[in-house]
Amino acid sequence: MTLKTEEFYINMGPQHPSMHGVLRLLVKLDGEYIVDCEPVIGYLHRSIEKMAEGKHFGQFIPVTDRLDYVTSMSANYVFVLAVERLADIVPTPRGDYIRVLMVELNRIASHLLWFGTNTLELGATTPFLYAFQEREKILDMFEATCGQRLTYNYLRLGGVAYDLPKTVSFAWTDGVMPFEKACEKFLNEMIPVLDMCEELVSENAIFLKRTRGVGVLPRDLAVDAGCSGPVIRACGVKYDVRKAVPYSIYSELDFDIPTRENGDSWDRYKIRMDEIRESTKICHQVLAKMPKGAFKQVLPNRIWVPPGEVYSRIENSRGDMGTYLVADGSEKSYRCKFRTPSFSNLCVMPYLLKGALVADLIAIGASLDFVLPEIDR
Amino acid sequence: MTRSEILKALGDKFPGVEIKEDDTNPEALIVPADNLVELASHLKDDPALSFKYNMVITAADWVEHVDVIYYFMSYEHGHTVALKVQLPNERMKVHTLAGVWRSANWFEREVYDLFGVIFEGHPDLRRIMMPADWDGHPLRKGYQHPNFVPLPGKDNPASKTGMGHHTI
Image (cartoon, rainbow over all chains, first blue to last red; front, side, top):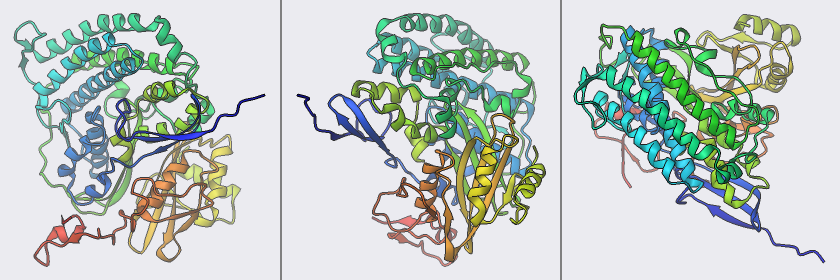
């Protein structure tokens, strides 16, 4: 005689302690196994795209911070890039270099935060503390540069809001140091900590069991569903907007795009770890080449942009981020749409969860590294 | 391939279809809404074009009509193109691309939710951002929030944008 169990629905979220933000997953269960799942989004919808139509371009930059609070610099960047392309504004060389430095530091901070919370969800507390210790140093540097730790509002049309501080003094610097020296010190000291973190978890039997072969995403599905960033690079697609459509100074920089073949949680973890190393390479080069001069072009506060349409793209820590901007000749955007990587990366959740255990739900979700404010906008 | 080369490739394959370059957008081709699916499928399946990646689908409201714009990219060749369909207010319908690209499913739901464009044949056309019982489509230019109270002053700029003072 076979025992038949009854299928039933549960709600994971929107207020779930280990869900990243307010995502609701409507999960159909057969005992411990997931039969089907439907992501329900929109709980964080703040009508950012509608707000863009009511504010002039400079006023709207702080709102873009709220798109993705983990990598606010990139969110600033993609909007500023779109306006600059339409208005034919060229940032000053120093401003351009500072932007890239900040965006890459922000990418490291984002991946460290992901690493910390991901291991925490798999039951390891120690790596979380190490990762946050390092992330804290990046936030210190951001705070010294632009006064903010999370929502930076740092990029401006034609450059950045403030120059880099001449000297800084933190708990982890040797007294008062020039900013560039402090940054180099951080980058050099972070790599050994990163190696140690990887050593702690990579060969750990529990970590391997929870990640290797779990949440396998086939390459064709990932391409078809519009996934990007580490998620698609873990499936063997060597694509990075920084290399494919170089913006800013990325064409002059030497860095690699890490790729892996299996597309499981383990590969996504490894890709992010490798990306931190590539980002430190970029930061070293940018610091070495940093030009002198003005950090920002002198422009009026309000800019009347000629009519036209543009789609600007950058690679943020989660993938391909874009802004579709329509201007009608006024000082406000006529239509401003943000294409956010988490939105498309979340689409594949139902596929990944089919047949998985409930215990793996959070782990698989975490390996996709989505951020809800970016999805809901 | 550049936009004009892609236009030529499409023109050779579909001689009867009127396709033209968009003056305002350097990447876009304006195509008739009725032929969208066959053009898009050809863009995806032809090995010389191979647009496997649907970056984004979005829309812009021009009061008399709504533009729906589709951005595609090819991993193989690295080129980008955008297709644009112009839908008049009285016929805000276009066939879905959810059968061609999986990513189109959620993008089209978002456009439906915020602009009210109907995607015919879509497997699951429901609201995605707004609550299910919401009235209207908020990104339309004529949309006004039910609790919207205009600010005093006839020419107050905040009254015109629809982003004025809200009361609960």
